Length: 114
Image (cartoon, rainbow, N blue to C red; front, side, top):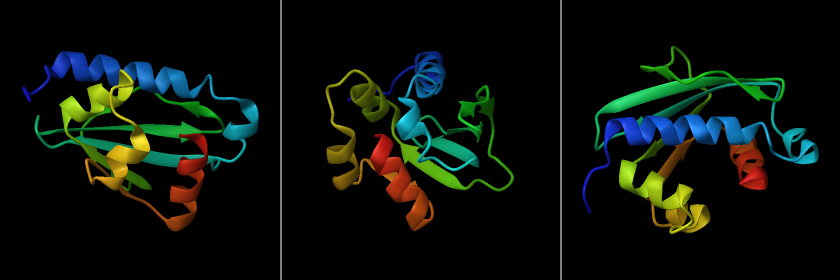
């Protein structure tokens, strides 16, 4: 599989962030009030982060976060496949295509909204 273009992945991450704000309020209530989320794309050698605060996600920032609460690592092509519905998130996680480091509570909350 070819490596996705950096601009394509940045746009996709921005779309995903804006999509989080459209989550049903009952699901959004399951999420914690504040979390720093970091997304690593190892095949592109880049890291981004954003802040979840009271039901809203901040803009995407390039670079690692100082103290991320949730770390997600996924290759760019797998991220695109998930976003386009070609790859199920749960299946990608089970196959270790998506790696998440977070507290057990945060993992359970993420599972509920994904």
